[in-house]
Length: 137
Image (cartoon, rainbow, N blue to C red; front, side):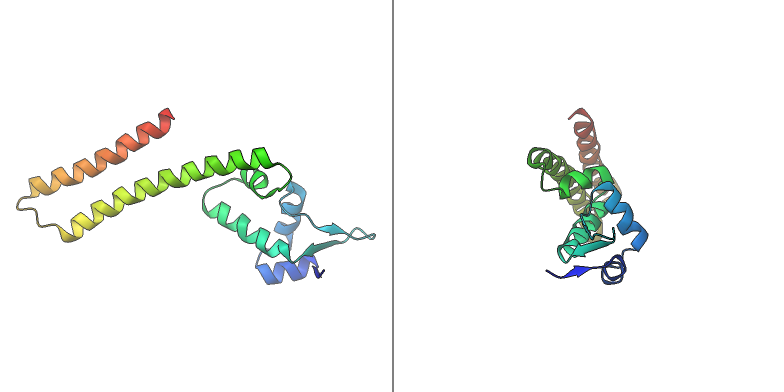
């Protein structure tokens, strides 16, 4: 099993060593401790860091990410995954409405500005309804 030092993992991943140590303290990464207390990271840590970066890009906080990346808490991990999937589905729905609206604007052949405004208002109404439903859920 190949093990990386903190510096090697930092260079390879582009994540600063201070951040790696912080992730270690939060339980996001699980280095192997040598008898001299130095950290060594298995190659799988690179994949773990990619998952952490992806989760951060999706808006997850570090507490949520810790639950998602830890393999020892299956029920909590599944619950967190369900919550994050629901957030992604919500974002996807909003993006789909925004895409439809922008496509309409790009391809608009409405004979009058009033008709175009009606289409725009319908799309914006869908977004507003979606936001209300998200707050109720």
